[in-house]
Image 1 (cartoon, rainbow, N blue to C red):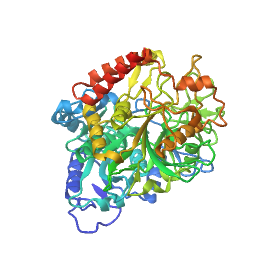
Image 2: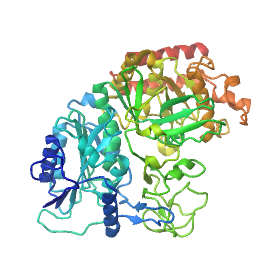
Image 3: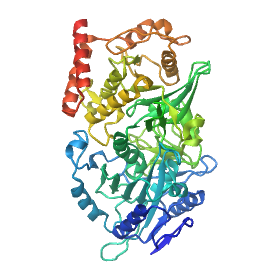
Image 4: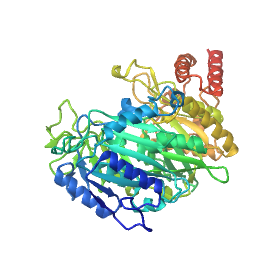
Length: 617
């Protein structure tokens, strides 16, 4: 067995201990090496040379396709096994010591039981492979808002993706001192090249296993992921660490780890505000993170597109960082018409996964252009022509790209101090009921809006049309502990922040008229909603009271140049008491499902809302 050390440690360490000053890291790596039985151990440096070496190796082995450098310099296409194309939600577990700490919205297994099962799966799982040790920082290096982790993996795809998505390598190693807290993240694709009898077999382009587990151990700050090489199942700094484990750390330490974008908005008058926003999937999150305002003089800059860590500072204000270094975006639906900033971001230095390959060596997916180019090869490597029932790109096809390439990236995106958050937005995909924008009456009401965030079922395959799919705070798949306790933590954060608490708003770009068409144009026109929110923060405009919260006055809303009929405006903000009462029944059922930990304050909010609605009938 050999070990590759990318640089000499700053002080002597025991043989095979690795280049950290953390005895606990070195001991864990040695323990995992003995369990996993790899041919080699490689401590990742995070250098450009290492990235180049790994990608060349993967191209030679057939697990990456180098794209035409004239169109996408230093960019690659990966094709996963068709069995391994998305997050494995049914195989994702919170292994807290007590089942009630995981709550009813998470899958729970006893830690000892899960570790015993996984230990046998991991035993020898890296035979014939290289064990990569990936030290990384979530958040700017050295920031008091950041956290450190060490991932072990046998997937070069995971290594190069982690280099894009995190601050990975030698600089992170230097942060790991003898007393540094860190998260242990163990990953294997579960496909050893040497069996128990010592017989070696040929590798495949995308190794994985039919058996998949993603287990989180919140008390011991560990992640064990087995069997999948795809996305958040293998890039353990993302949802696993930055949300599921970090949400528990945040609860314990008094901060928030959230599934939120962060933007910097500057008005024509030069007033700058920072906003965080939670949107469930398919609700325009990336588009808003990279918003191109249609209102003259407005500027929106990107700080983060997916995850925010928010912590009170010494002055009592809520500061936020984007803990990630890159974007792991959904490709299908991303195009010049929908998100030109994202398209400009992925000009090069990008890893594409499960999208189509064009004759000229570039990539393509549905929504990138109006027409598909001829001669495409689909995400599974088969010839494809327009009009086929199957799509050329997998619906969950992805791009992984450094954040610093984004044309709208803000200077502050990498600031170790973070940015002060002035407002928090919640937004689901609602064809009915929820107005275009409303302001919470206070922090508690804002938590109620976040707790009841939902999208409507829109197809028979999803359930009954009109049925709400609740995704509180856009965190339903990502909260590492009981949802009711999570809401209580938010209420306590409001008490702690007091007068410095950000204002909370709810938005809905997707309300429809009687004919089924969208009432609001969305995309860049959402800057008009942002304009109203900013002017509310400045105290320049008022509100109209409603059961939903404070609504804008038409005369104070920036509608100039927008052909929006009065009837459409009225429908965007219409509150139908009978429809809201029916919806409140679903909310009560959802609260009952979460159980006894739902804060009394939120149940009271729901009761008061129903009384108000009944009085309006």
